Structures are given as C-alpha cells and as structure tokens.
Length: 276
Length: 333
Image (cartoon, rainbow over all chains, first blue to last red; front, side):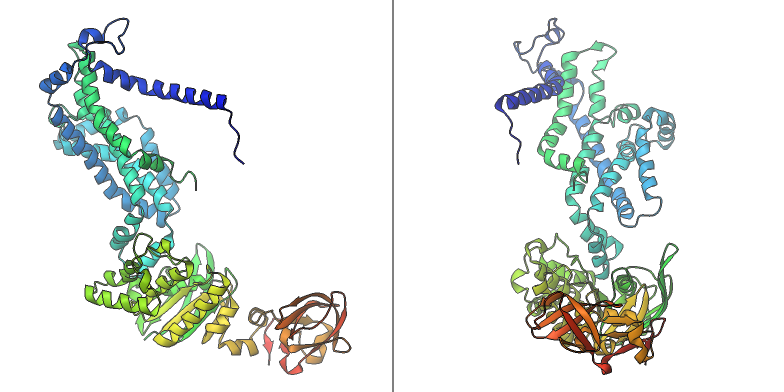
C-alpha cells in the first residue's frame, strides 16, 4: 500500500529540495552571471545579482588573450584519449577478475582502489622527474598516460561490477561455439556490457576533463587543457573575477552539456550493482 | 563420428576430489544420459568432456584424438545449456550463425545452414527476433539450432529442460529424441530426472558422489540394478526396501521390490500394513502403507483401488521380481 502524503508535507519537501538544489547550483550560477559583468561590478560590495549592464566583453578578451580553442582541443584529446586507453586496458582486466577470479582477486581490487586514497602530491616529484627525463613534460601524450593511470582503478572497478552481472554460461557458450578469447570479448562480452561501458566512458571523461592537479603541474603552454586556462586568470597581476568567471564558464560548458544529456547513463553507472 | 573415451579421469576442486578415477566409453551415435541426484558430479563430468573444466588427471579421447588439452572449440562438440545461454544482443539468426561465423564459414553457406536449422526447429518466423522476445521452448530450440549448425561430433546437453514447464518438457523431450534419430549423432545428456533418462537414453550412466554406480540400457537398470542406490534411483515411485525378518526366506541382507510388483488385497497376503495415504491418479493408484517393522511402503495398483486411510491391507510381492542385496548394498544374483 502506498503511503499517503499530505499536501503540506509535499510542499515542504519540495521547498527543501529546491533550496538544496539552488544552494548547490548557486556557485555555478554566480560564475555564469559574473562572467557578464565588468570587473568593477564583479567586485562591487554589496554584490549585484541580476540588475547590471550585461556585457560579453570578458569572453572576447579571454579569447584574445589566451586561445580558448587550443585549450579546449587539448582537454578533448586528453580526456577522451585517457578514457579510451583506460578502457582498452581495463576491459581484459575486468574480464579476468569477473570471470576467472583467483584467491587474491578481491585483494587486488582493494589494492587498486587504495591507490586512489594516496595524495597525488606524494608521487608528484618522481613522476615529474620521469616525465622530464622522458621528454613528456607539457605533451598531450604524457598527460593522457598520467590521467589514464589515475582513473584506471575506477574504470576497472566499474567494469568489474558490470561484468559480474553477465552470466558466465553465455561466455562458456561462446567458447563452445569456437570463439577465441579475443572473439569472446569483442563479440559477446563487450556488446552485452555496452550500457556499462558507456557510463564508465562518460564518467571518466568528466573526471579527466576536470582533473586539475596533474594537468596544472605537468603542462606549461603547449599541452595545457582548460583547467590550466582557468588557472591562468588567477595570476600574479591580481584576480580578474569577471574574466576568470568567463574562462570558467567556457571550460565548464562543454562537460555540463555532455553531463546533462547523459545523466541517465551516469546515474545508472554509479548505482549499478547496488540494487538487484 | 562421435566416439568419446574417458580414461581414468579425475577432477578436484582445491583438495576436494569430486570425481574419483573414472572410465567411460561413449559409442558413436549413442544417446547417453548421465543421471544422479544433485551434486553427484554429472554436470562436472559433462563440463570436463566439453573442456569448460580441465581434468585433474587422466585422458579424454574424442574420435581417436587426444582431447585432454584441447580448448572447448577444438573438440568438435556442441553444448546446450540449462539457461539456454543465448546471446541477448543478437537476433535468432545471428545466434544460430555465431559458431559458423567463428569458424569463418562463407556467407552463402551460413545462410543455407541457418535456414535449414530454422526449418527443422520451426524457428523460421522468429529469425529476426531477439531471444528476449521468445518463449522458453523457443529459446531452447534456438540453443539447439546453434548447436546443430556446427555439425558437431557430439552434442552435450546440460539439464536442458529443467527451466521449462511440465507440458513443454514432455514435448521437448520428444523433439530431442526425434532429432537424435534424424541426425544419428552422439548425444550426451545430463539430468537429475530419471524419467527423462529412462525415456530418452540408449545408455544410462548412474552417478553418485562422482562414482559411476552402473552403466546400462534403461531396462537393464530397471530390471537388474547393480546395487541399492541404482535400484532406488531408477523407477518411480522408488523401490521399497525391506530388512530383517522378511529377508530370511530370500537369503539376503535386504530385499527390494518395486511398487508395481506388489499386489494389494484387503483379505490376505504376505505382509500386513495400514494405509496411510492413497493417491488416486485415475490410471493408477499409489498407496502408502505403514508396514510394522519396515516403515512406509508404496504400492502401485492399476486403475482405481478403493482404500481409506487407516484401513488394514495385505501386500504380496511377485517373487520373480524381488531384488536381493547383501550387507554392502550390492545386488545378489
């Protein structure tokens, strides 16, 4: 039997939900609004909310001063590249852990996840030195590799939970049908796991897109993605709130649009296996 | 050709041996059924033959070729699984064509074989459906279609009918038997249902705790069970066993007599008992009778036999149909 919910209770719950939603969204909204203000209005006290002279001047300036599209392209290459590379490595790894688990599989999974608990700065110096010696500093390939390694545990974990839901008998059937290990993964496992792989892909593109520690520390100009582009506006010359906001808006926009259209897959991906 | 020889094969999981050394010969074209209670190792044995599990020791020879170390695909066998194990993302056509695609068969040939198989199995109208849109029986037929297009040396069936309802099960049983007659290919069939075993098999292998208790034709097992386990497992309702006083006349530790080999009377007979429960099926009646000192015995009478619970009845076994067993449970002949 469904529980009866009174109208006033519904109203309160709705109001609370909206308040929390707006509270969470407010910083982004504020950045968006500020990006259309002049620098003077941006730092005005008390702050001006909606009634100011809207200007797109910041966007023009930002694009003139630092090439947005070059950073945008770097972000695209690095986030998609690292995710796809990660998937290529993680699919066989997750296959092995899900379908031929050994005594230590659980431990390996935990160990992999534990690397995410390590503060990245702890390994900054060795990685920086390795990158320097291998000539990978400020290269897209270097960043792609680092971000792939950073997100690999999450990719493997997500795929592992997906694969576990696939009945082993179907894979055995494909083996009986003459599929090699490669055929089994390409023709049977992967197509069956498409929803899982898609949400893993999306989530990891977002994580890689927003990753700021390594992208800031390992790039200077050539390979710098949008995170570095934003950071360049909190510069020694002082803070330019309006321009910083314009840069942020431009950096957030693509990934927000992607997230908006794929929210279903994302939610499913994050809650998969939680309820059966 | 589909001759399968198992030589002293064993299987252990960790330090637990589930199949002690075992020999078995499966002849070309035979319909062999592995039957036994759950956990007796029958599925494991089938998976060893399929190559889905590795033997711990011993050899498997298929058509004279050592197959022990061959991967499943190279053994020339096809398997039908209990859960059907169809590829949910492929149409029926693609499901059936999959093994041919893996074997790099050319397209025209694939089309021809898939069409043929679909005709044989009444699947022509469903070729473009996904497995999810089919009923249980149709799914099972797709699984069989996927197996026959490979023209395997032998078919392996792992409890293929246990997910179907009773009526469908009877139909599919007949279909599989017909298929065997048409193709005359070796079939190895695993089931825990002794009715399936009795009705389909040329040769039944009764397994218990990984050990082969007896191998023989259905009637051989019914008429001449080698030990008490086989005697009790084959036949439904199961054989009645008696120990103690009634066995003296037969010079045995225990005797067994099937429910259908006992005559029931309300006036006289060898043993006396009280009716506990009578199941009237119309065609026959199963009567459960408490016999002092022996526990419950089941008697099958043809047609209806009017008894009420609590009534006293007399049982007379057919002396020619009495099975004698020694103290270890082996049949005495």
